Image 1 (cartoon, protein in one colour):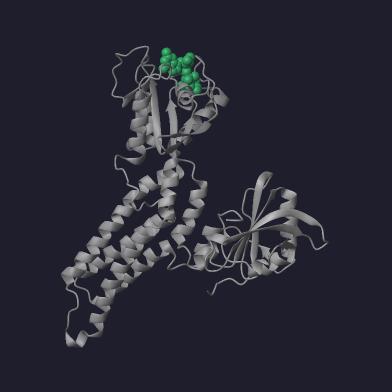
Image 2 (image 1 turned 180 degrees about the vertical axis):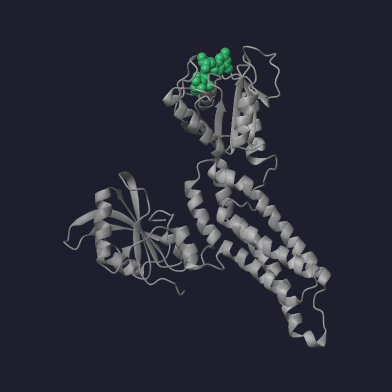
Length: 452
Ligand SMILES: Nc1nc2c(ncn2[C@@H]2O[C@H](COP(=O)(O)OP(=O)(O)OP(=O)(O)O)[C@@H](O)[C@H]2O)c(=O)[nH]1
Ligand SMILES: [Mg+2]
């Protein structure tokens, strides 16, 4: 196969540091010859069959034995990158790795750039761009849900969906264009009604994908949740209860928490980034004042605000209105704490809990999840958008399609409609990398680690 890159590259593919085993990856046309220069085993790697493993020693140019290793051979196109590739499994010592890589660099091999192996897999058509991005997401997944979402994308569900929409667009626009070619003869290949129907159908499918992003974003990146309220209502106690550890200082003195305390917790497969904040009140204390300022900032940045009051003091409308000014109503969950002290407390809160006894906490988790991902559940078979770049491209595509709809309703000629459809197709193509610029590629792959 013809590969797009000339150089042969190498990098450590496993985490740096000591370990039982480390793996050095090599990919490109000199992979076998460069390894043969330093590897002494029963056979030459250049003669080995694909998908075979060979035991031997790595010998330096000074004739020193560096390590016993296993060499795995992958012949193009049947490798991750699509190129001739080798993986050397060594003992997990940073010194050994460094020595072997320096030896390799003597034989027309260079160090890989961040994400370069995955980039080559993309350029050589082994995976599309959305799948390449999913490689990073799979590696970074920290919850079950985010892993499932990334796997879903790596398996190509989003790509297939986007590809089928592109195909529908291409079919429609080529018929319109064909009709333009035959304009004099007055033939109609597809009725205007049918074109309208097709476009509406594609928009509906794109809308589904766009909608899935609110869920996809949450499963990929987690949800920022700010715990706010007046001093002493039990914000830190709630944080500790959720974390099952005494993370934040709790005391009966109002104004205990001064700085923001951030902890991540995974509940029911979703990652919540919890921010315990300083109780909000008017204060002359400079440190506490700064804390209150940070609390407000946390509110404005939060995806969800747990606005906490307690069941032993009056509900504070002033605070509620202040918080409302910093966020929007649909982000707020009103929580009444200390229900163990007064279970007759009357308020319009969404959940009543006790951070002391744990009463109501499961209900709180339910409400939290509902706020975070909505009630719609996505099956494993649905394509889910988890990536902002993809989301933006979908919005762009939708915009072009809506233009096409307008053109049709204004009885514009086929040229106008077909330009809009082509633009929509380009926008969708960006997602899977059918249409890319170097900028997009560099931006994506530079965020990868070296060795990926
Ligand atoms: N009975 C009861 N006491 C609670 C509950 N939650 C918190 N407390 C007590 O209320 C007091 C204040 O709790 P904290 O968690 O420090 O309150 P906070 O909202 O973080 O306070 P600041 O950091 O000062 O803003 C402590 O004495 C807690 O033990 C609860 O559900 N029931
Ligand atoms: Mg506190």
